[in-house]
Length: 132
Image (cartoon, rainbow, N blue to C red; front, top):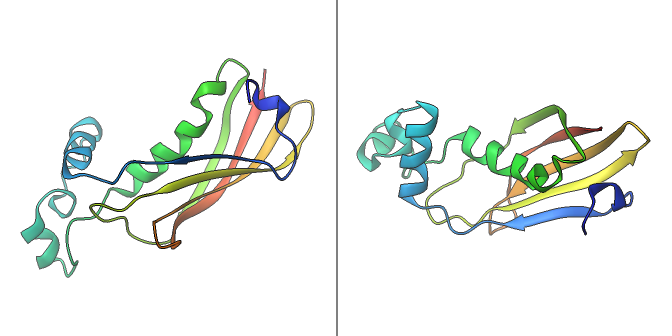
């Protein structure tokens, strides 16, 4: 699809990410300034009661927003609201999805979600994309 405006109600944008790596999370920690060690150090994550390090929730949210990056010439994300539903661990393969629910001449409303390789939803929410 060359234009987001060509998307029909019920159709989706989708991308499957490469497995989550420790370096992904270290790079995100540096970029975001979120150095909470549960995201980068196994022992600290285990001390916190986790089975291992977990991805930053905002790392997942940011990746989901990238579904819209190719279409910024057509508009912009006006509103982005999500709920964190589960944790993302090292080596998880995350599928990002944005399904068009409604559209008019000014905006497009999407239901968005991200799920791991087991089909477990890790975030869900909505995006309003305003057309220019």
